Length: 326
Ligand code: IPD
Image 1 (tube, rainbow, N blue to C red):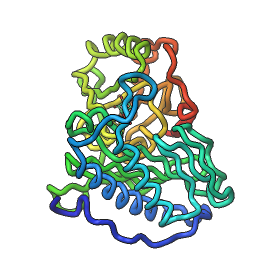
Image 2 (tube, helix red, strand yellow):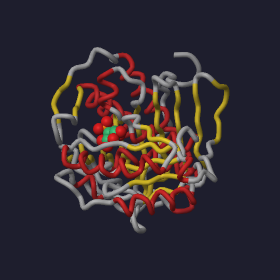
Image 3 (cartoon, rainbow, N blue to C red):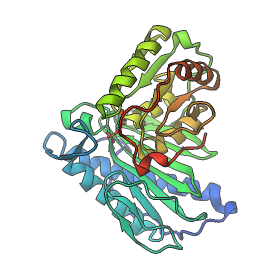
């Protein structure tokens, strides 16, 4: 692949895990660089096997699939991150929580459970090895590797690599959201679309895997569609959040996201000027995630609050309990 995107793996400087507040801006930038490199390497692995993968199993429903490559990519990401930063904790969609930060030593809870945040002052990586697994399986372009770094419960750095689209999004807390691609030189600072009225907003959304949740989401989207410019469903929450950041859509909402779906993309959207949040003052999370510029956020929030239905069917997991500030 030409250009900087999907460059070969290069050794990353080893850094210690203890984090003091004063060192955080520099650390966040360093974590974003590491996340970007590892995301690109995982994306390269995934590209090499695209179209040749089989289903390993289904998860929460027959539509919720895992491929052998979800696991292979997560293994690579965990190995690379923990080789560079051995004391960090790791939370992955497929393997669950690994380690508890510098103070906790290493212990694994398998099975995709959310695990709890590590001790303040330590770094935890939050990883979705393939966000958009169904797209990956079908050869559609919107899937990517999402890697976020969390310090004391806050996402401070994130990278989302969408290799078919040849783009890499990064976000650094307080340091902006950025786009690199193999079709443009340098990196572009992102800014979400502002001043878009709800009636003219292009709104991305997504649907959960459970049938009852989907039926509810169908009723909600039927209430949204007549009130906006149009609806888009890419099949990757990370891609949708980065699309808000890049102005490719004006807003995004979805119910049922897991922490790893929105950790990196949520930071990237916020660093591009978007608000992220849930309903009625809650943080973005499983119950609802909305991302848009501030005025549009409020308008979409109010519409969704009026359409909101009580949680339908199963779908809660420990991973749901994580919320993303913003
Ligand atoms: C899914 C995608 C999809 C969204 C689902 C997510 P996965 O992630 O982000 O767009 O609608 O809610 O679960 O399962 O492909 O990692």
